[in-house]
Structure formats: structure tokens, C-alpha cells
Image (cartoon, rainbow, N blue to C red; front, top):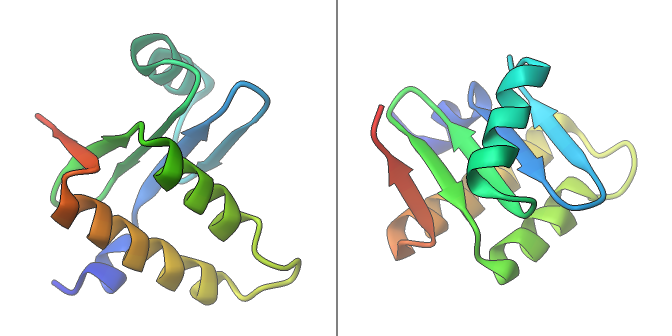
Length: 100
């Protein structure tokens, strides 16, 4: 399956000291567990193939930029940027795969 298509259905949580952004079905308790286990600066995402965590400060800054894309940006544009970034992070090892 093409990663861009797979990522459209992905769920993610971005946790920073100041904010928490979620997409997909996460309960408050699940978000709190992610924060407790992985800390206050983490991007956790999952798709049909696996779950991943990202701690790299440069990747997290890039992610904040993607999510902060101009107001009113089409969701598909944001999803395409996320798919490109996550594919690179997986390829380069910045995204750490978790056992399911």
C-alpha cells in the first residue's frame, strides 16, 4: 500500500510541553499513557503496518511547521506533507518502530 494512502487513515499524537495535538481515535487516558511513557516531547503515530515514536528535535520542529500550515489549508495537503515526512523518518530511522 502506498504510504500516502496509508497515512490518511493513520492516527497520531503530538505531545509538547505546551500542547497536545491528536488525530484519530485516542482517549484521554491513552494520550496520558503516551505522555507518561515517552515524555513531554514526542510524536506517536500508527497506521495499519506499525506504530512509531519520534523524539528527534528537528523532526518535531518540522512536524509543528506542517501542522501549523497556513489556516484553511486543505486536509489532503497537510496529510501529503505528513506522509512525506513520516516516510523519510521511517527510512532514516528517526521514527522508532514499536512492537504491536
